Image (cartoon, rainbow, N blue to C red):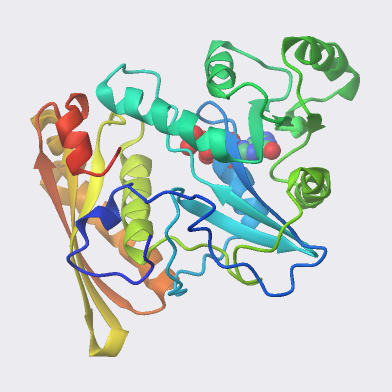
Length: 327
Ligand SMILES: Nc1nc2c(ncn2[C@@H]2O[C@H](COP(=O)(O)OP(=O)(O)OP(=O)(O)O)[C@@H](O)[C@H]2O)c(=O)[nH]1
């Protein structure tokens, strides 16, 4: 994956990447003695706190100015180096099981192949709960992979003793490598997690420089920010089957200004109306919220133009998925 944005690089707003193999691993630091480095994935059903944990682990600030070229199969969500250990978090796109469309089947395949390559999987559940949706996620994890059970939202459990019988049950359910009751919202818990995870990282040189936080491209991050605003402002009304494509990306005044044009692709006219809102108010709000965040992230002025397009049945069509780079 390249990090320098190019307006013609259509795949950039999509999700494809080349393969992470021993031949094309990023160069290692010259002095690798004592270093550890490994890939980690955070999985769990919706709403268990994956994003909260990820943000807490890698910090809020995302460095998207890094121009280091990478050709890895995985989209790296974040990198955090703690003392001699470098934690490289990879993305496992969506666990949408609500609608059994081609999109979901593809995503599940992606999830499985991603998890096959990582060194350790962080399986998040809500402390004291293990429902059918959690079971489905657990079933996607390849056998033999070290899985750390994170019992998140511990702060919702008022008496710790109440959790013990549940933890014992969980022990019988799967041979988890570790059990970590914690709150992703508690700094101390998050820092302790690094120490717990460190032994699972292979002893090898770092893949990234110490201060790298992400190597995702600016265009990809921009599409994610727009998507986030889209979902936030449409609530549960909008199905997962919508995506954001960056159509135009122009840098002006030597990078001091960016002109971005993006399309929100939905399946139905009704969804289009939902996004646009009465008098176009909602789309305006999505655009202005996204613009403010993009300006902060990229530290420059941003002109953002948003379009809503209807591609009927695109989520069900494998061909469309390929053209959007979802393979
Ligand atoms: N009380 C409490 N709430 C938490 C904790 N971690 C996350 N949350 C809340 O749980 C909700 C869901 O968190 P997210 O991080 O968005 O969950 P997610 O798993 O990324 O959700 P999806 O994007 O739907 O898959 C948010 O309201 C968080 O603030 C925690 O440790 N304690």
